[in-house]
Each structure stands twice: as structure tokens, then as C-alpha cells.
Length: 240
Image (tube, rainbow, N blue to C red; front, top):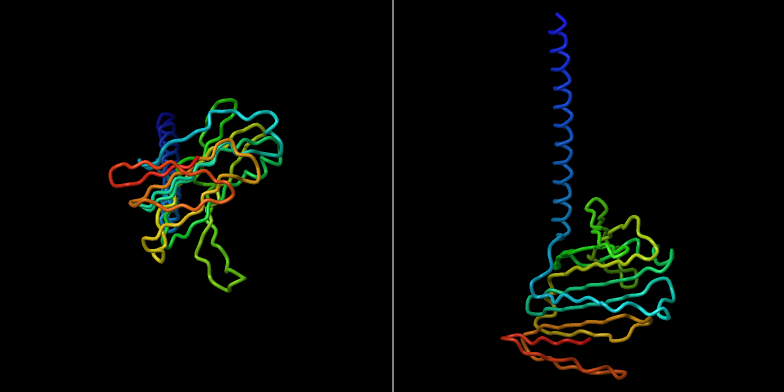
């Protein structure tokens, strides 16, 4: 009799455990389905770097006299591919104090999902030389832009907001993304502004344009001429 009761008790426990596992699996499936649907609706994905991107990093540390303020960009990296209509951005920021931490606790990327796709590559925090990924699907939010009050036009742009937890003074934030797609209203015309100076000092500025045809540049305020390099059918134009 005792063995029968014990067996029945174990059987009930196993059933309860299996039911709990089934519930957990069900809600995990629901969450993944919801997340995938949310990403799809907003034309968004997390993916590796495009093959055409040149990987750039600034290996030169800031001098002490450059560490004024709350933060400083170690790297500003823009690479525009007009052949594939993909536009890559990469930033590395060192945080000096609590104001810098507060300023970069959220990363916001704006794009128009009606003709653009946001491809997020990585959001890393480097602390004491150790790099840790901070991409958290649960913390990603998509916010619709409001009407443009000045022009009374509906703005279809949305903002992808990534909230970063546990970032501290002394951390280095490193993140990159690509926006794929270009408004058809521009046709084949290519135009862009490449800034070589910012309001605060930047460790390294790297800029690249890839196009099918040679480009015509205008220079202002002593801007340096870019280096042009022809490869196959594309023109690679670097400005650093």
C-alpha cells in the first residue's frame, strides 16, 4: 500500500513538473513569436556586418587633456554604399562620469521602415579590457514618430530604442548598425555631406563612399580632399 501511494505521489510530481515545463515552453514560444513578429513589422533584424564594410577601430587612447566633459567619441565611422544602397554607422564612446553614463544609457536609431531596413550588428560595452555584448531583445523598443508639427505632415519614421543597464564610469561603448534602402524619390542621384570636424574633439573620423561612378566634391573651411581608389566597377572614396 505504501509503495502504491509513493508511486502515485511520484507520478503526480512528474505530471506537475511536465506541466510546468510545458507552460514555460509555451510562453517561451509565444515570446519568441512576438519578438520575431515585432522585428518583422518594423523591418528590423540583428545580423553580422556586411561583407563590404571595412572594419575600423581607433587603437590610440585619448590624452588626459582630451578627457574633459562627460564623454568623448573615440571613433566616428560612416561608410555609405550607393551600389547596394546600404549605409553603415559605427561609434565608439568613452564615458568619463555619471553624466556621460546617463547620456548614453539609451541608444536611439531613427529610420523609415516603409523603405528602409535597420540591421543592428552589435552593442558592446568594454570594461577593463573585457568586451561584453549588451544586445537584449527584451529591452529593444520601437517608437513611432509623431506628426511633424512645423509642417503638419505625418512622419513615418520610427525610433529603435536600446536601453543599456549597468553601464558605468570608465566604460567604453561600441556599437554599429546598417540602414538598408533609400528613398526612390532621389533616383540615382548621390549627395552627401562629410564632416571632418565636430564641436568636440574626436579620436578618429573615418568616412567611405562606394559608388559606380566618380564623384564630384566641393570643399569648405579647409576640408581635406578624399583619397580615391578604383576597384573593378566601383569607386571607393575614403575621407579620414
